[in-house]
Image (cartoon, rainbow, N blue to C red):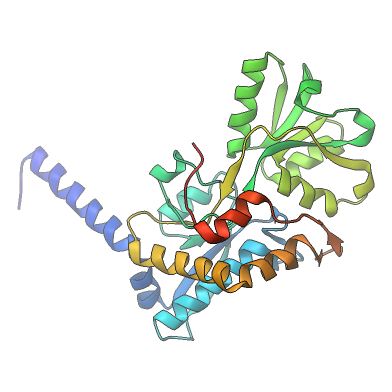
Length: 296
């Protein structure tokens, strides 16, 4: 056995690397444990949200379920258990990294910073940061937010984008951080903030499911365009290929467009609201390109 401090440190590092390498083999992990754990969000309408207690639904939930079915088929084991794990903006990446969650498909932006910690699959949506405000506020864009209170959600790229915009334009906004999207919207609903900055598609979803959708509006030009994608652990090429194969197959077969119509162009739970949001050019182009290119 090594006795020097340096040798012990080398041995520990080797053990940690071996542990991480073993953990990154998701298909083996699922085969050994007999279960796959999928993450879901509680208020990322229409991607991943609760339609009722313990009932996650959404566009990304359906994609994750299709991946789980493909894993069962690959391992020739239909009895594999699918477990569901709620995650937040703050803990979603650590829970993927440490093996608690095997796949996170929700409203997570694929960018280069996060790409150092996790692997992203094919991009399945594109969005930008805009504002949700009450019509009575008179707010029509970020320029109207000078020296006013703005809410956004902790652990999101939107918070970083808005802070930079605030500094660059010297708006002196006061930023209030919600723990999740519903909490951030509640800050506006209760008058503690005057607008909520978030991905526009999530704002449309939250507005559609508000108690009085007619009193809200999504306003302002998007500050940036960012892709959403499923997250998995790094250095796991077999599982990455399986996930990309599922999403790419759906894009090629037309199933992806049908799924899009179900969640963005049709009434959705729990209130039967229709977002009426046609597919944008970036996403339409990616049905062919099937790119996993991150935002900067």
